[in-house]
Image (cartoon, rainbow, N blue to C red):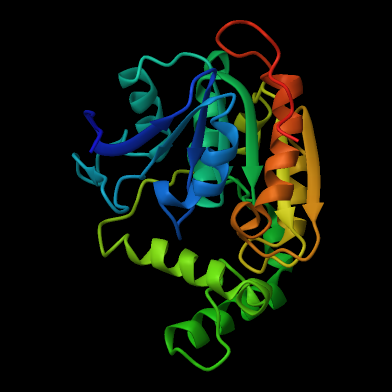
Length: 273
């Protein structure tokens, strides 16, 4: 299995396809396997890099939690250095948004475009306090799932996926189960001042039925982000990329065709549809 031995962590990664590097950062419920619907699609025009965050599945930390550099954004920077990748496109889901937003702010010259799916990127917004009803619903669904109550569902999937696409729901759960009980930390946060320095174009995608990171939170972040685009996908929960992969891929493909449009030979990447 391909590993990168970094000073901060030992990171498992996968690379498929040729072209400009497109890096996918998974959420807390996933790992590198989560992006199977994206790598199959985007590898026709990009070199797709997926990886397990330290503490997930096959990756582990090499430093203590007290190390001041032990944050996922720094791990991503080291991984890209190890792979000798300079400018990249980033696609982030949920927790992965904390990784990629931190990287994009710290390395503006290396970030061509950023996709933030179902994430507030670790930025504290006072408006979070207004979502008590959504948080109560999330706590209820987590409790029901933990107790395996009839009709319960994985919160990162949502009730619609469980009812309409039960096989997909079960696949998500299986991928999630491979993470085990490793140490997970190093999310990191950003400030509003730091966000103002973000230079790359950013596409925010949210599911209209997301109870983990409500769409209002994602939109609130988009409003104060330089160069944003915002899309809310109906009839979708927290894991838009997994539940509505065709629509997600189409949106990301369209965004990248404008902001990260060239393959290694310099010719424009054509739409996959």
